[in-house]
View (cartoon, rainbow, N blue to C red):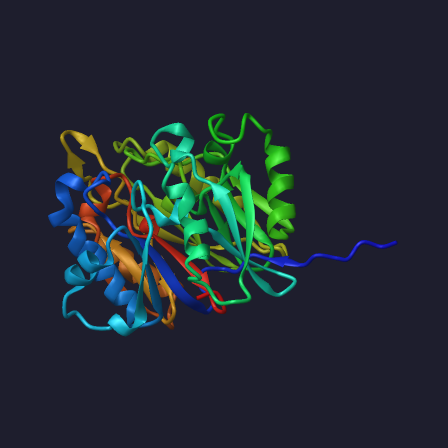
Length: 345
């Protein structure tokens, strides 16, 4: 007897969204000493998203967050879900959304603190907490994938069956017990309904805790376009690795056999905290309905990055968000958000 065929599709970020999850900073996160600095950044992100779609805020105390949001408007588009968290990196502890046989489905992977670097016991319960609180539409299905470690920031989908990722992250021995590239690729293809996986073996950012997440380095903008971080300064510590990554990108081809249209994003002016260079990257942008939120760093390169991304998304509004506070904890704008496609929230 023939087994029924399962059709899985992993939507691209630029497709219609129902909303975005934020996991809010609080006194028991790593932001405890700088809540006064980082909270306005989260407020800015939430309110910009709320102009276009729903905002799903995970927090231990919604009254505090409502007070922090103040009278900035759009509260009608914001929901609050009281759940404990270790930290705020929703991109990596939130579920990854797919459509299985056209049914909206949440894939709940294990987040292990980017290779056992940080505690994640509460973060790993957030997705199940959201499901138990009936935060999603009634027909949304939950799937337990906790036997595999995977973070949303480590993978990029073009919505047409191609995944872009980095070998340094997904092949990390502290994530999936030393599984080989072939084993991981087979798992990804089966789980996300993929036709192929494109691997980058070069590229990194100083101060990045994730082990080279793809969303800090190179991003799909449409099925034929990739925006990536380019370093033009031979004296910069990133020059050689990013030059090699650029060479890899130039060899990649679309499903139809064409080379990708590549849009280079500048390296932000170096930012340091206690002599440590921070991972200021323009690749960590967030695509939402009708707009792109672009991280800025009070850098001379901010305007260039926005102009380059406008070329990649000519029909969307570019909105700069000051993310200097975020990079002090080694992440940026995309890292603190997770989008949900249409029909999820």
